[in-house]
Length: 404
Image 1 (cartoon, rainbow, N blue to C red):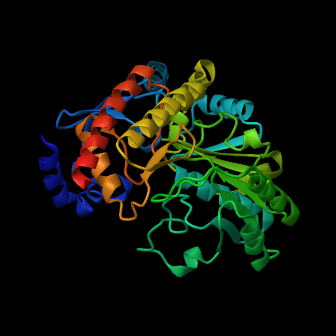
Image 2 (cartoon, rainbow, N blue to C red):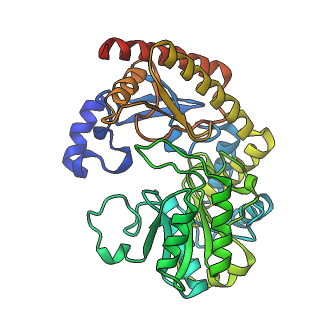
Image 3 (cartoon, helix red, strand yellow):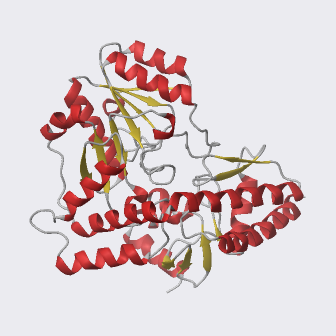
């Protein structure tokens, strides 16, 4: 069954044929919608085309597709059971591993996706403080529930009424936002770096990170780091740990289990009681297979220095793309951590150049995205990146020839 045939069938039984951020209809024309399999840092679509994968399933795959250690752990647990009347022993083992790995974590609660985790973290903050308002950076993505989804379709104004926005990396804006709801701030929620779609990424300024921590302490609010996208690709201990800034609560998901569905909230002892008071649950939240996969993923990243491997591959990719762009006469911006990279073309307001280039990359076996950040995995070897750069170089040449 071809991609085109599957799209036609899907139109009859799925709204629009596809929905959400995986909807290929909103990408360049050459993007496939349906995929057959993945292995290491490669994916194959249903039409048999092979790609070196720099989206890593939009972040979850951090060790490479079908990593043996993770798959073995998942298979062992599946042979015992997955969705049972209660969690398996692995839940305790995974919580212990997170507490041992993350300095700001004294406990862990589990769910299934990043939206679960960010929402649950805010519930803990409100339960702890008895307050309602949440300070959030303008344009930041924290999930797809009504309180945070980028689209207003199907939502009501009341579901956004408790959000107060500030500008990322602006201490003045953050302080001003807090002042407008003085005495009623339950939480400050912030991503480890600015990774809004359609915009160049922006690393956090250490002074801003420290100011957010100081403000939360001063006003008695919880500092929540949304590490859903960046977690386990910058620092296993938490993405702001290198700055000496520890949150009260952290939301985790994506790379946590190398593609298996799981999310977590970790928090400090001071918030243990409020966390315990919540009624926040799901029939599939305690499935043991994903927990076994998460434990194996975190241990493998730790034991193999997986983040350092991603940093080497990401640096090689960034340097190679810079040289190619310059050689073909393009001015590009490469932003974000090298493990979570993105490239944009200077002056490309309508994304026409990015769309054409990314489509050309696909034709040469390199899967990247024109307006969303990419992801490295520990499976990207020096040889894999070099092969990918052959494809991107051809794509730059074709893009230059197309635009003149």
